[in-house]
View 1 (cartoon, rainbow, N blue to C red):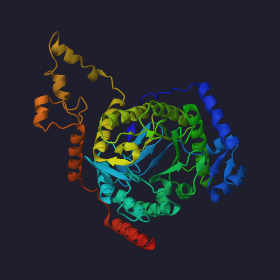
View 2 (view 1 turned 45 degrees about the vertical axis):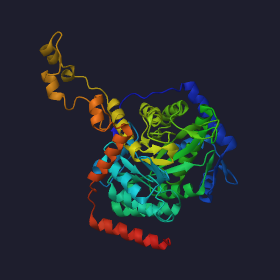
View 3 (view 1 turned 90 degrees about the vertical axis):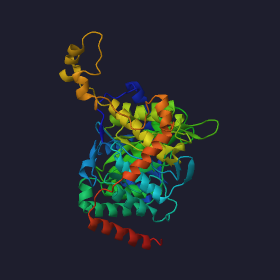
View 4 (view 1 turned 90 degrees about the horizontal axis):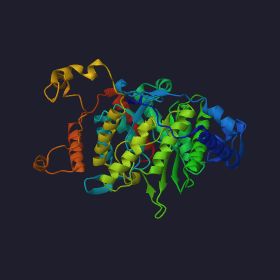
Length: 479
């Protein structure tokens, strides 16, 4: 977990915020938001909101009253207490890529396998900059669809001792995740006291919350586990082409989803989610790392702080098909404003490629390299007598050099951040090392990390109980 104590970059004036406020209020009160769940609709009816078929017409002030019940920050416990994280305030928590059905390793692009899922979990465990292996790090197509959530959750619980994400494909999958989390953390009371998993609840934008996601939300919020209520907004497809219209829609969708969590369980932890970019207006393809997405990200951070909510956005997003220069600059175009905005929960921090269709080993390592450098850059500068180094000036005096100064000799091993992928060799030495580009060097790092991986210790009785649960549930599901 990284503490970003640097000032936040804010671009919305008070007048702009007031205009956006009017925009989301009009959407929820005049157009409404669909909830494809009778349970959700009944909660809203009982709370005095107008329900027409599956559409809820909201009183905006009611929405704000519910949002105000959500905590400003909370902790999520890991089975290794050293990896427990804080969500909110100045904390930034980083998780792996989420959701790709494909994997790229070198020049090979292929269907993801369970072995790949295991490898990415091991990489997450091996890098300190990554706080969470995530959830669906990739879709293991060689496992049965009905029960693969059991394999993924078991892998996250045993191959890492960091926090992990819950499955949201259905309410049943969510309940399985909760049951396995209770086994790992000693019961329901333990995880209700301090949450132990985070789950992503996506809105089917525009303005619809679907039944599968809502059933998962009911399960997690009732158990006091945080949910990330995230509008899925690609401008030009799922929202209008203007950034202000998209921000107003995002507020309408996220705030009404948050209001539902508070009706399920007042005070349940939530995260104001944002996944905002645009499409290519010629091809219709999603675009990432765009100026528009960066602006939307910066605005989202400011908006969430205004509501007193932790916020999710950002990541190492790119449309590129390979871990090339485009992948690097598009990812930085998203990750840099992520830091400037002080985003609290950052999904897709490492491994995202090809618009999220691909989890890449090389891109994973390169993203971690960038992440470490940004964490160094956003660590506040300490200015004191030692860092002023007057003694070094006194020793070297005029026209000398500081290479052999006592101040340098005492600090040269730790004075500067040392990249683990970058090459600063001269040409001849670089060629003697194989003339490898950044992607090839990243592949070497990934292979080395996986070869050196050691599983974190886990009580054998807990492991056996988890295995027994997975075996029983797989049988019940017919797999």
